[in-house]
Length: 185
Image (cartoon, rainbow, N blue to C red; front, side, top):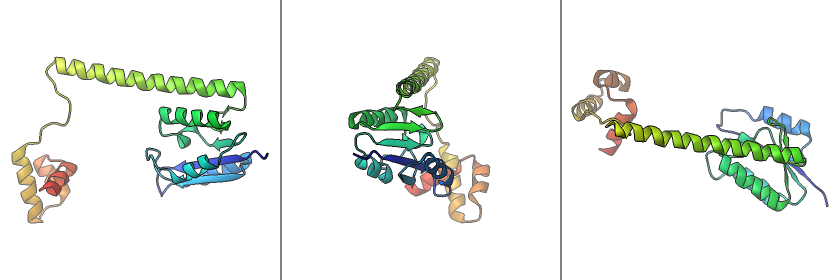
């Protein structure tokens, strides 16, 4: 039974280059590289899914960094559970994690746990901050738009005499708010 090393490289935009990651994976000695130019927040990452389907027991996934592989801590943990279930190893070059070793498994678990802890703390601080603001009579969300200024901005826009930047400066209505209300009218 042959064990393969599969590399996974990802950049978030078309303008970014995969070269650095591909070079690192090639230098590591991977057998095949799956790469894509797609934001990590997208649920559907076709090349990652192709690689996951091809994995079998004893194979190794090599990535430049964990951030290239997972969209979130939860997603990384899910991928790690999948790798464990399939008997697949993970090597992350940046974080120097190699789950073929006991130390690598421990490091991955610790990093994942710390990341999850930080996310949980951030969520808790956000909830506490919102509760404190509400207790002082403040409400969250966007500030209300001055309806008169919004109407003035729309009239200026329809007149085609002013740029969006000029309209925003004259009325205090942001470009995005103006576009949202023009689109909605």
